[in-house]
Figure (cartoon, protein in one colour):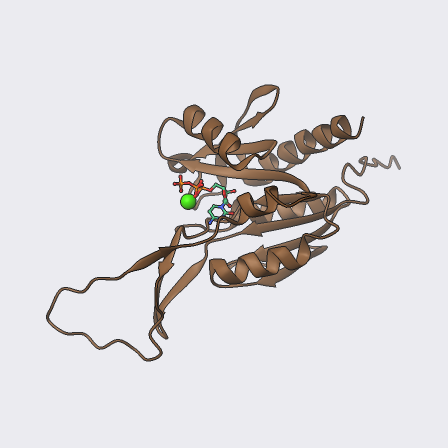
Length: 222
Ligand code: CTP
Ligand code: CA
């Protein structure tokens, strides 16, 4: 019998992550949300756990099982997601923002179900906090990884996002390549350049992202 032992690339690391969409309530029965299956985030959580990390997955509403070895904190709104993340980040080595956080929420949530009328209706929205940017701006931030979902001009938008949020590693993808499906095509952006990971299953891409992340953590520790 030949046993194959994988090196545990993230042994001893606490990884805090977000995944899935957020849901921003309008009234008790309605809300606005983003399109996100959570599959990429959950695949990455599983890959981090398999690499030996302690993984806390702050997740918006998705219908996916919790990966083995992962602790899930279930939330609905961006504000709840931010609170859960800030509670978990102290002591974390890595923060990975995969969630499709709603950029805006209804300025008010109605206590009771809003009744229809024949008139047009306007919804006032207010900006949500940027969870990734907030974590990256902490005095002693964990190593921060962002995702960027774009529908065009991936390189330009991804590079701009990496700079604006001051995250050392950003994973870019075109929404038409990945949304909802089991495969994706992503490009990594870090201080040294651009690394296309090709088209593969989200499980396989998650492993490649963890490999790259672990290399950067080792380089940073040198
Ligand atoms: N993000 C976050 N909190 C938000 C919005 C985004 O933590 N309120 C994180 C996402 O999880 C992702 C990264 O920021 O890791 C980029 O999200 P994206 O929606 O692509 O970028 P935005 O900065 O929101 O810009 P825009 O939607 O205008 O492209
Ligand atoms: Ca956004």
